[in-house]
Image 1: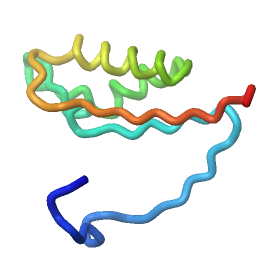
Image 2 (image 1 turned 45 degrees about the horizontal axis):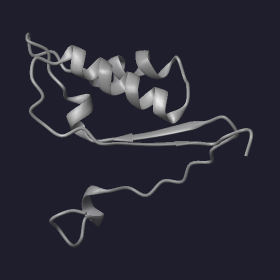
Image 3 (image 1 turned 90 degrees about the vertical axis):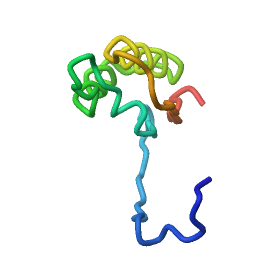
Length: 90
């Protein structure tokens, strides 16, 4: 998915153990670096406020994108999210 064949110098492999009810959110910098009219980034603090409420993957997506769009002056980068949730009912 990138322009470079070997990205091993720029990446780090990690393993995460998800527990029932956990949600994993992967995002591109277009979300975390969304800037307000004063140049302030949405950043992790903005994202953490939204994520604290939990919810389904769809609810989390809608709230994150909505909060970032409300924060930013203009969208000048793509925003991509991948949200994985361990469903307790499954």
